[in-house]
Image (cartoon, rainbow, N blue to C red):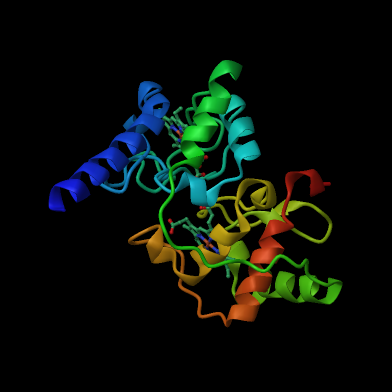
Length: 215
Ligand code: HEC
Ligand code: HEC
């Protein structure tokens, strides 16, 4: 019985490694954490990429990378050192690699998801959450976002949320807001105590932030 369990377990590990193959080949693991056994490196963790990202965004990003953390990544020695202009650009990858890379990233998952509500916010709720995002909770002091006029504004110490609606999965956002420790042992974002309804509305609000709405 025990042997069988070990066999099944090693089979599972093997298949997990096989799917991470192209990520290892392309050296993603030299900067990114790709599995739960490793610890965080100089770039954001990707061992839960399948929980966090939308596949279409990943494809665009790997083809033509954009800056998400204008101040740099906290674990990087260069953090807050340089402006966007003189930071090294992310490696980009040829068209023929993209589907395989995205598939491998989407297979990296960890358990734990707080399902997000799917119904869109009413106009009133949207205005209320926008106010809370900017004033009550001060999310804007660390995150770039879009103001009412469709202009980018906000602090740069956290990841930009300007394109979050194309980039992130709603369930992941809800999970991040309710239990960030699932994804990051020690983060720098303050912990908010939100009731489930507010948390769901924040998630829907963040999903409305899209770069095509920049004016
Ligand atoms: C030289 C180090 C380095 C290598 C190699 C590298 N990355 Fe990155 N990657 C970074 C850094 C730094 C960021 C953060 C960029 C930002 O926030 O603006 C990043 C961001 C990302 C993101 C967005 C993560 C997030 O949470 O915002 C994805 C997805 C990603 N990389 C995938 C890959 C894949 C797939 C590979 C290999 C094919 C790869 N990277 C290779 C350094 C690297
Ligand atoms: C003091 C700065 C600060 C404030 C205020 C703040 N955050 Fe964050 N947030 C961060 C940082 C830094 C991260 C990246 C993870 C980390 O290092 O802890 C983050 C990560 C996130 C992410 C995940 C983004 C990604 O791409 O990984 C979301 C979504 C988010 N914050 C939403 C919010 C919301 C909603 C609020 C207000 C209710 C808020 N944040 C307030 C600093 C902040």
